[in-house]
Amino acid sequence: MAMGKGNRKHGVHSQRTRNRIFKIFLIQAGICVALSVALLAHSLVTAWSALLGGGLYLLPNLYFAHRALTFREEQSAKMALAEMYMSQIWKMSISILAFAAVFILIQPLNPFSLFGTFILMQISGWIAQMNMNKRFLKL
Image (cartoon, rainbow, N blue to C red; front, side):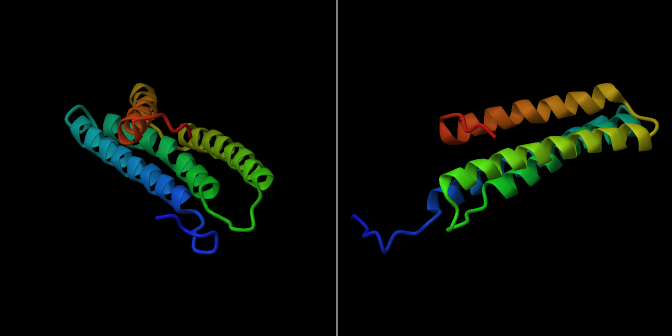
């Protein structure tokens, strides 16, 4: 059934995408916590470092997704693209500051566990996106 222009809901597709992306973040958070709990068998420092690595990945990406995937009815394509660029710049800034803060403030730290979990979160996001949509949604 075709909907008239006046009946069309704005942002339905972007809301679906937003829900999928945040579902992936929830899955990644679960993976991070499960890995950290498993690493408690090795040491508290290793487990804590893994949890920090997951947080260093998730927090800037959550910020980016929230800001970039928020539907604004009055927003033009040009404004949406500018918002994406600004969101990406802020995401990178948050990542840099968060990494610096962790390396300055947290001692002792297991860098292998921290970076390993960070990389695992990145890879798990790619795999989850491909499996959920049967296509790649790049964020």
